[in-house]
Length: 228
Image (tube, rainbow, N blue to C red; front, side, top):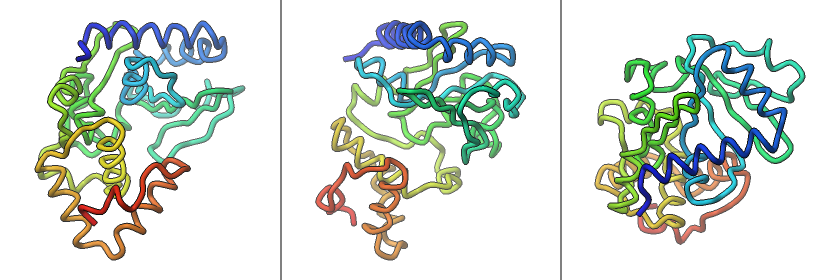
């Protein structure tokens, strides 16, 4: 069982190594720090915890600013669909955005502050946030998901339908189940069933969403069979 203390240590060490091994990333972080604290969220923390090298990392800047183009001159980047920026390095991609551009905050589902970042994650499996500057970690919900081996939706019922990417959410649910062994809560099961019942050719839609989001195929039709 992974403890929060170990997550904290391994994630901070991972970020430190990343900065030491790539001077351009270190420069980027220094420039971004002029706007506010840098908050590492989601999968990269999980990757570092399980001694994997992340292919991409997501960073929220604790700042009301949303335009960072001036400091990105000299870096290879593009604007991403979430109102932030994707910055390309040799072996890793970094997505950055201001905290007010976070989906749950932008939609006024939650108040804008660090403690609510994890609460705005769609799944408990992704409820991870680490302030790189202060070293403050929020990982209790994730730890519980791994301990109980249950994938659950963190959002209140009234806000679930507000999420704009149900196909990607469902693909991720099956990937998490297949590769991490988490079983679906009733909330997740109902979410999948309700979507598939009102969607024409759900397997085709999910396969297309998987390819668009991941750029490859990780699931088979048999993985979806029970639901779709």
